[in-house]
Amino acid sequence: MKRFFVVTCEHGGNRLPAIYRPLFSKQAALLRSHEGYDKGALKLAREMAAALGGDHHYSIVSRLLVDLNRSIGHPDNLSTITAALDDQAQKQILDKYYHPFRDAVTRSVAAAVDRSEAVLHLSCHSFAEELDGDQRDAEIGLLFDPVRHTEVMLCAQWKAALEKALPGMQVRLNYPYLGVDDGLVTSLRGRYPNPLYAGIELEVRRDVVMLPAVRHALVSTLAGLFSAPAA
Image (tube, rainbow, N blue to C red):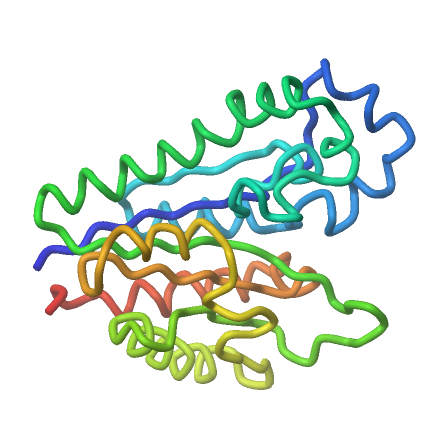
């Protein structure tokens, strides 16, 4: 079965449309923080997409306006700032930024499945060096659903390749989050069975994702796993 790649970056920037900037006039530091965006994730996603081909979808609107990786109704879908807006204002944000992004990704996956191609969806993120005072002790995390064989096999192979390419760096599975937490990948798994769809969330620590050698290793090792046709 032929494979088709979809690369996404849900938190690629911290920009705000002009109409919403007054809401965040005192939040400059927050916008620059991990709560505002995933530092380095968009650069990584672009390099992944260039190497793998397929479709690439990204957003540079801050997740403080709307988090494209959270389902509507999830506590993190809207920040405390936008959640305080009235229902109509919230709907406008969702209609303008959330639904178009999610629909575009879904169309890419659906079109590939209709062509009888197996989809590998790679969702690129970065994570903070520490959380609530606890230092994250790994540089790279590969998130997957443990009951989906394709994802399990791919992440095991990718982890092994990364450990050879990046000696001294720690690669962990389903870290720093669970691979089955609410997200775009999780929602698409609910629509498409294995092996038609495999979704991997790539998490790279913010201080590490900025290193060109690390990004190169991430790209080259994954591309190397697919030098042969999909089974």
